[in-house]
Image 1 (cartoon, one colour):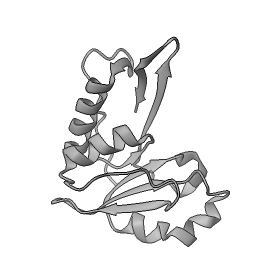
Image 2 (tube, one colour):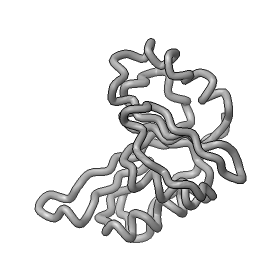
Image 3 (tube, one colour):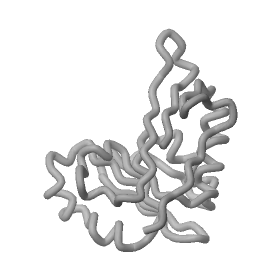
Image 4 (cartoon, helix red, strand yellow):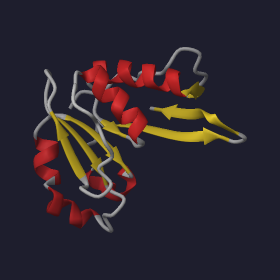
Length: 142
């Protein structure tokens, strides 16, 4: 599989950036337009990526359903939450192999629970609140 290009927001130093929610949404939309596979989490970012990718329906957290599928002009989008998965063996129960084989955009919350079953060309993104300022986030991409 070809390697992905890294998309780092403007003003990012070594992949680290403090973002407002508006800036995070704008970056997510840009990332969605790039059609890259992801190994990321948080619904706000997933919503923005989906919007940028062309999803028009409401994007919600798949916490209890584990997998939500959306339609987009380029391909289907799968938003997967692996929080309730206890081992990579359980991925078979949610159709993981079929999801990955579909060559769709896949957004994964709690990707570490997939372990070696994550596609090799995934784009890891870590997102966290900035200490002392819950209105800004710290983004680590790539």
